[in-house]
Image (cartoon, rainbow over all chains, first blue to last red; front, top):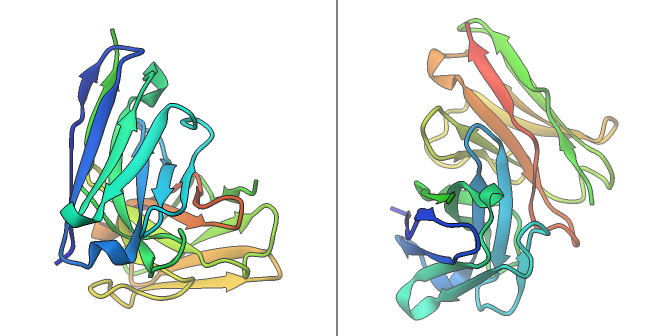
Length: 122
Length: 111
């Protein structure tokens, strides 16, 4: 059974940093690209960032480019999102998600984590 | 950049069939696969359709997906509506410049 478990969310002041983690199990982690997707309270889904299976290709949404960094550790079956210079508008549930395609670039999601809430407020 | 446009809301009664559309603003809908996600209140999203029309294991065959190149749109059809189908539904696709684009979401109400 595929499981994606996010951690690291919480309350943080504007301008500060936070690092999210996602522990993956139930599939061969280093065969698949991974995504971070967020959802502000009461709003729709917004793609944040994606990384391919070997970290050779990475992409970001314009809204986070230059502030957020995605990474993965295939030996630990883990995905990360380093979030710097946080803003109030970054407040959202952050979901870790597994891509559909085997050893391909980003196409879509087949499994989602339960999410971790990040609140940016003074 | 392209956009995916969905109706804000749809509704129908139990047992009926409902279709949710997803129109791509530029580029062909057939060029890149479309996925559909269901999000029930208070829960994380789940995938109900991938690669235009494929159902993950465990998703009932009441859910089906299709694309229509004449309207440059994708559709999610749910037949035999059940109260448990009430949720927000999102379409998603991509292209070479945009790795992941979501539609704005459609709220399905089962009356």
